[in-house]
Amino acid sequence: MKFPTLYTERLTLREMTNDDCDSIFALRSNESVATFQERPLQENMEEAQAFIEKINAGVANNDWVYWALTLKETDELIGTICLWNYSENITRADLGYELMPHSQGQGFMQEALEPVLTYGFNQLSLNRIDAVTHKENIASINLLKKFNFMLNPDFKDTSEIMYTQKREVRS
Image (cartoon, rainbow, N blue to C red):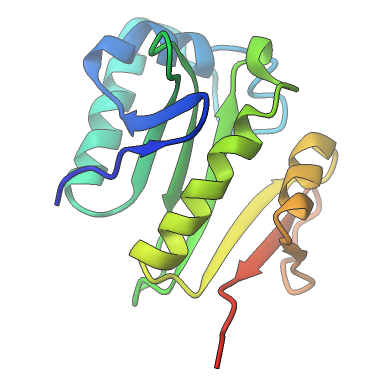
């Protein structure tokens, strides 16, 4: 299957390449970006390269769709967004995203999220997309609420909360 490149007014959501290694390292070694994530910071370029290889292998195996979020005019990688952790029957997926601090607060993730949700519900035929975020990540919570994600009361965790969006069923 050909990788699903998506376009918005200011962004290209494309497959990650080895040319993105510096940007992926900058993103995944940034303490500010990792504030609300439970993952270690990358410590060197080899880890960034291994991450890109792991992501692209998962894409090739249809384990997930993982987009490099780039500025349309310059192809600068400013973040990532993905649909991953599919349910066994591929009717549900988790949403993940991260954005460089210098690109936050400019509406880029909101712009990227719309075509990703459309792709998930229409092309992947998902019935539900979940997003887990830290309880104190107000920007992420507000973004999810803008897209009508609802708090999932069944999710039990002390530091994180889950928001869920279900496909609208039309008769």
